[in-house]
Length: 367
Image (tube, rainbow, N blue to C red):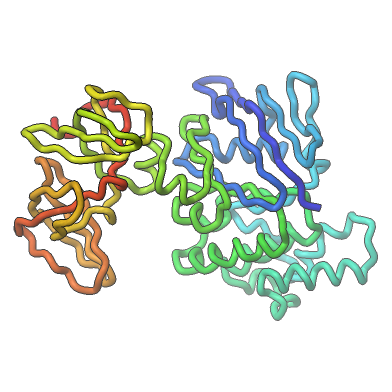
């Protein structure tokens, strides 16, 4: 039966260096998929391994279905085999000497169910992952994507309380990864299973997660829906990591509600969305997605002259390098034709709701 997951003030300190996990707290309601997203070394996999019981936390508490399974302060540490978990790893971790059916039925052999019931559960799991017709095939005769589906079926066949997935698509080629990514959410929702999923791929996180938690240096920076993470990042790191790779700096001149006027220097002013508590006179850094820069457009509050430095035609879209305020920015335009020539002078539009202003404490990109 699916269950809730509660992680409270989790901390993991290895022998040397900063904590791998530093005060992380979040909850996963029953039936929800939460994705932990972040770069390598941010603590997301260590967090998942602590939930699984494969790592022992230094502090904090983990509860599954209301039952505390880890609490160093209270001397509680339930072993992995007693947590009723399923886990899917980066590697396929299938038994190569077995058939697909034998792999999937294996977790049921140590449970008190009849052979008929076990066969029924196996058939259900294989149907869910789309491998019914491969049941008696040697697992080594399958493709990488199919082997990962076997690993998934084996993890859900006994309907664990919680499913943990550690970058399960990272070893697949690009085409297989996209196909299985789309199927995986459907499969998990059909089972109604609570899932904690770890990845460094923001596109994967957006497609799969009901909510996404972005981590950096052992800390959870923001937990929200894909829409919140993508359109209202909590800080500059979250914005940059999820694709807002262009940056402008300026000084906040005035504010009105959630928007403010920013002075970029040399008399250039524009409006920006203020996603942090900022006051007039503060230095700000603005994050902007390439796809939100309108090339050749002259509508909206922020219209500035720019020059096309380079372009990369990609079939269904074109990526331009543009010079704006002496900075090299990237702009993305959809369409099968590249409309702007290298060297051309043009106007660009920066929608104020897509210009996210944060407090600036770093070096200026103009230097």
